[in-house]
Image (cartoon, rainbow over all chains, first blue to last red; front, side, top):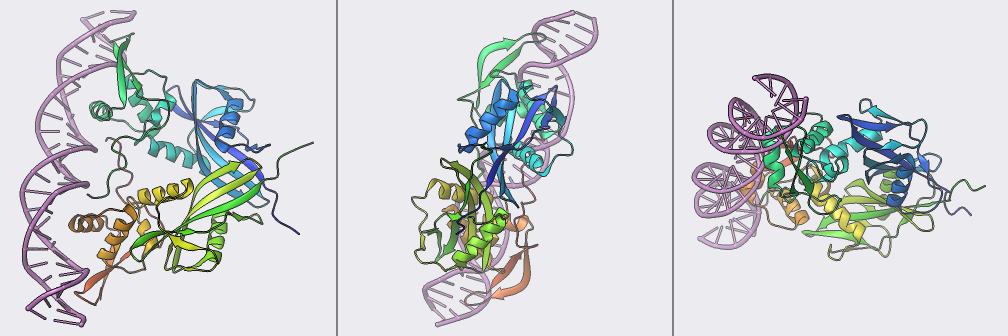
Length: 195
Length: 195
DNA sequence: GCAAAAGTGTTTCGTATACACCCATGG
DNA sequence: CCATGGGTGTATACGAAACACTTTTGC
């Protein structure tokens, strides 16, 4: 009597970073077969650490697919900072000509960065407003007005300036995100739908 | 040599409807074990049809969990209209005291209805503006201003009035959503993030 | 002194919000 | 004629968008 199929569970990482002023995706990654039962977020963190050594990593589940043959693939979005590649055959690639899953991950990033503090994933703990703006410009792939950006970001009250400055030109104030390094929605989100 | 675990794949439905002017969730549902490899959206549709006979159904994947023991659960949000229950032990319940997964599904619905045409899932093909407004009020669980609602919805240019009216009082114009019965984002979404 | 990046305000425009009365029909 | 739900406009407030010049440093 057949009670169920034996499914193979895979985890697929869409790994994005900003390097050299460009958004990059990690190419050459296989889907990782999960060898043992494990919370998925934990598995994503573990597999990502096998792939890269990075200052910061952030992972978020994207979507799950089931294919013929009982192959189940859970896709994860991963954002990393200053990552070194641990495995052979991997390389950073431009974000042109993405797979459907990777394109979805990028879309998620582009949306989420506009109503959360997710930009922290691509930044060191302390950063200048120009660096933060550049992060947005690289992710969104378009220019942003400097004055409007500063007004908006500062009005959200999600940044703290600890008085330090970065030198090497005109000194720039250093900021950090208030609170822990995790996604928080902006105070104004979600916008009310009438009334 | 152990090459992988044998995973049990389950599909869990969060089924919502509007009945009698209230948002209701289908209680008594088990997690459905997937007996054969199958695209997940298709499985969700199939399992939902085992549970209810409805005028319209809409399904959307929510999230995937993996538990100890190799149990993998893919959660789906389902929205139905005028549903009859096919299975014993099921009942419509209020949306107080929801499980974590169900609460997430409801949150998804509340968000998505504010920037897409998803309200179609709870409405017949043709409906009055008052019925559409009521759908929003029930889902969002708050009152909405009638004049502002009409201005906003009509300005989005997603409704078509085909000249028919509903009688039984002062005649009310009947509208339908333009295009097919599938989720489309409003022209103004996503709001630009500066510039 | 000059190149390079940091920093700063105002005006305009569009959308969101608040708010109350008349109208058409069925019974 | 009256109860019920359908239908309509305006004034205010707020946030988004457009837009250019001065300042501070390193070299």
